[in-house]
Image 1 (cartoon, rainbow, N blue to C red):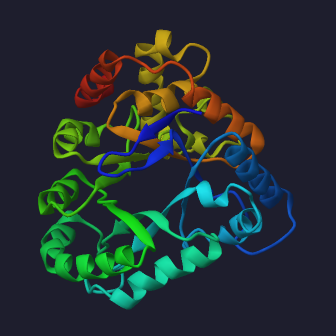
Image 2 (cartoon, rainbow, N blue to C red):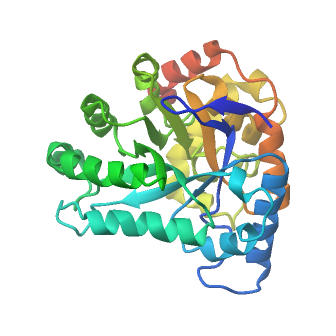
Length: 314
C-alpha cells in the first residue's frame, strides 16, 4: 500500500481512503449487500488501508462497528468524519453541542480513541456562496473554540473543511485556521486544481472526494446499457466529457478508465488520499491495486486542466 503524508498534519495515510457510503443497508440486517461491504472493509484494512471516511448521515456505521469492535488493527486506523454544523436548517448558527455530538458518536460507533480529521461543513439554505461565504467569519470564533476543546481532550486531531466551491474554499483558506481542504477532484471536476499550488505554499493538505465522478469515470460507463442509470439523457453531457477524457488520455488510460481515474487523482503531490466507495472485496482489490501503480506525470494533470478550461471541446 502506498502511504502519503497529509499536508498540514503528522499523519501518514494510505493513498486509498475507504468510504462506506453505500456499503450497507441503512439499518442492521444480514443481507448480501451489507455482508459484501463488511468483507470489503476487512479486506481493505488487511491490505494496508489505514484511512477510513464515514458519516452519521450515511447510516452505515452499524456495519463498520461490527468489523472494528474486535479488529486487531483498529487502533492503527485514522478516521475522517463529516461534521456539518451548521446544517442546512440551522439558520447559519453554530451549535457547539451538536459539533461535539457528531464527534462523540463517531468515537463510540467506530471504537476509536481519536478522530484524526474532522471534515467540517458549514451549510446554508439555499446552499450557495451568496450565503455561505458571508457566514464564515461569524462562525470561526465559536468553531475554533469547540474544535480546540475536543482537540485538547485528545478526541480530534485536525480539521479540514468541505467548502463545496472554489469561492468558499478561498474564504476558508484565508482564515488561516484549517489544516487542509477536502473537495471533489477528478479529470472532469478540475476546479480545485487551480488552488493546489497555493495549498502547497500554505502547507495545507488535500483529500480528494469523488475521484470516479460518481461512477462515470469507471470501466462500466464505457457503454451504458439500457438498464444503467447513466443511460438517462440528463447524463449525456457528463458522458460526452468522459468520452473526451478517454480520447485525449487513451495512452495513459491503457486498459482501465477506473485505474486511470484513481492514479490521476493521486498524481499531484498535494493530494494525499482518494476517498472512494469500496462496496465489495473485488472493488477494494482493484482500487488498491490501481493506487499502487505508477502515477501519471505532472504533464497529464496540466493537460487535463487545460481540457477542462476549454470545456472539453463540447
